Image 1 (cartoon, rainbow, N blue to C red):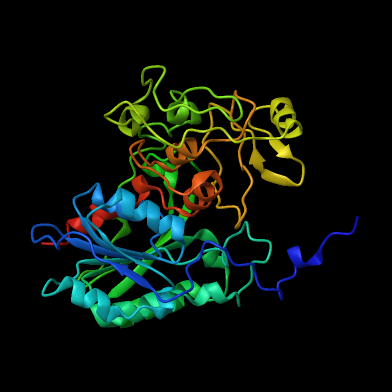
Image 2: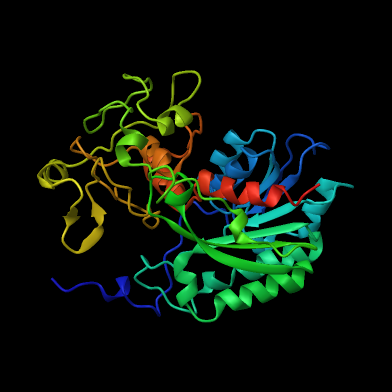
Length: 379
């Protein structure tokens, strides 16, 4: 059978998700602007991983904006006091946010600009992908809102795609009247059980930001990296199609204690409904080894390793990783744990869209390390 060349052809545009809201943006106002906390706006917010990391470190998230409907639903559920804009950021007027803030000066603006055009996992990765220029929309908002701090993150592949890193540093510096700089951060260094790398740009008015202030907590000479067993080993074992919402065993690691919900209950722990041949394939794969010869990143996880990078998997993603001991793919709850989302964080939209959201997210523990470094510069 001849392979469909469009899968690989860079000249053919990538199919767009049917879950994108392409009509006029919908602004939903919630909560009040606080006077006693630094305030944050996040564009391209996804389900809110970066926002959660900042919120866990004393920031108030006043607005999130994204085009992906399930992501905005998830963001709104987990940030009930935050306003939202559902829609294409290119159609959003920055003055809507300026009016929302009133007389408050914006402390931080964040953007997790679309990364698929830079991703090393993208078969059609190339410099002229339309999504690569979306950071210029972020620049447009910086010019109007003039925040004290700008934070932009993307995948490590951006560093090897054209001159984007230096162009972005220059554009952020010019727009924000500050010096923006960037660094590649390794998620396991901040307690995330996943070998995920994110390129982070930070600029602060009147300050030359030093990435040495982003303090690693794990690694050689520090606390050992968090393993898969330490991350998800306390979650109930499941067979395909089974669900659970209560812990069946005590927490066995510090990470599990941090992740667990105070109520003892959680959502999104439903095993995928696999065909029999998929179940047999997972069962026959040794933990730590690839399940499919052509896709080396699609492994059956082992208890004593860190996860490879979770990805969104396109608009109709299949399961990416096999469970270390159960013959199935991961639940959305297990994917959340691997990203460092706590168990009281609820992902809306079902299993497939849950994979999209958790694959696109920035790990909250990684975002939190950046937030701590920034906060000391804000009065």
